[in-house]
Amino acid sequence: WADVDGFRTADPKVISNAYVIEHLTFVEAMELCNFGAKVIYPPTIFPAYHNNIPICIRNTFNPDAPGTYVSKEKAGDSRMIKGISSINDTCLITIRGLGMVGVIGVNYRIFKALSKSGISVFFVSQAAWKTQPRSVCATAMPHWPWKCFRPSSHRKLRWARSIKSKPITTWLR
Image (cartoon, rainbow, N blue to C red):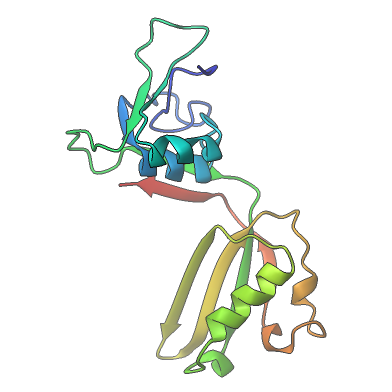
């Protein structure tokens, strides 16, 4: 039981015509939770998933609402996108430079430095273009310590910088 009718297609505070999603898989529910949906605490999904126990999310204050059914089975829904969620106040970490091109293990070193500093990354993107240096972008919550980005603490990450980004949005397919 929760204080909402179930998972919605979007945050109703942002999208006024968002409606309740009838059925999600465990993976879809977990992805929406990880990217901002506050319907269910994400770690509670793991034991249900591993023991194949379906979850029915219903509203305590509106018990007649059908809610959202979460299980391993995919619904016969033909919609390309089931829901949209977003996370506000994130930091975009951009690491780029010509010195990263062709270097074996550069991503390992980047994420090892982040991990050692207690920074949990929840979204990663990387790119390379003919005329531009290789770049790796990652997002993290702004309250994590940024000590690993001082050039003195990790020489290989001297190109790193952190900026406050726009909300990260994920479309669940």
